[in-house]
Length: 415
Image 1 (spheres, one colour):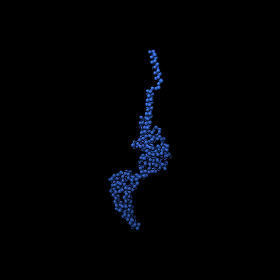
Image 2 (cartoon, helix red, strand yellow):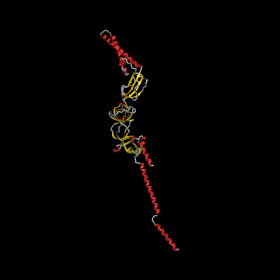
Image 3 (cartoon, rainbow, N blue to C red):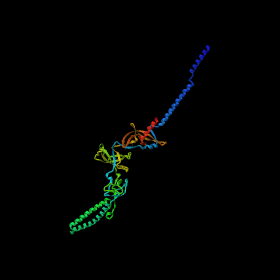
Image 4 (tube, rainbow, N blue to C red):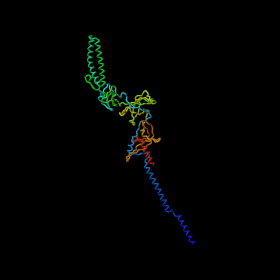
């Protein structure tokens, strides 16, 4: 029994030593392998997800919108161009007409309107008939002229006859003087009536022949456009009452206001560049014609009149203008103020990428950082490499909307 117990103990010790020396169990090896494979798969999955997110975020500084979106927000683009810019005298003013290029038309005699031949906006020539008026007094004036003219023929013959008799000593001086006075007085009346008929547009020679006109024409003294018609058919128009307003816009000029501190820099012949509210992107030229010699009290400024060099029929009296008097300028790339997007101290513009129109009917725009310079008449100078400036289209309207779309896209990708 003792030997059996010893053998049993020895066998147990042998088995325990064998287990400790054996290589890692297959179970332990499989568990570690599965764990490693799982970690590897998780890493690959995270890597793939990161690549996918990076693709979704797209290229940095680029925003993509559909053509429909661009149309909805009123997106506008223009090629980048060079402009003349300068830190010059800023002035404001208004388009105006010289007094001789506008007319308010009134009748010389009162009458009722029998016909109107024009409407506002019509282009008319000098001497063109605008309306007709009629009145019994007009007819009476012609009858009076006929009677006085016929009487004058008799008085002239009587005066010449008595002058001959007086010269021969046959007639008395008194008879000669009375005939002379009557002839001269009637001659004056006839000449006066003749002038009045001419002012009314009636031919006195035709009236002298027996023709009577029931209506007289109202004509334009200048060539131009009809601004206002202030009458209707049948209206009675009193003498000197305003019937029509005519203006010749081809001779329009600019009336600028220049403040006291800038007066010494203004001279006749200087060039002025200006733009109108209707066409803020277009620069027009004018030349200083005269500098006023009297201050206006409110504001304290003088008038500077300038002739427009490139007249355009789209320019109308009363239009507000902004300009600058050229003191020296430089050429550079410039964009409208609305095209500049500011983020902190940095300024940006958006340009259409060369492959901006994709197959998906979308447009791609890239944000470009720029440094700005002179701000002149609504345009801002930008410094941009010349090689980049060639053949690019800049977003001039809707740049801030594109910037908002870009920020919105970045926030969505961040989530």
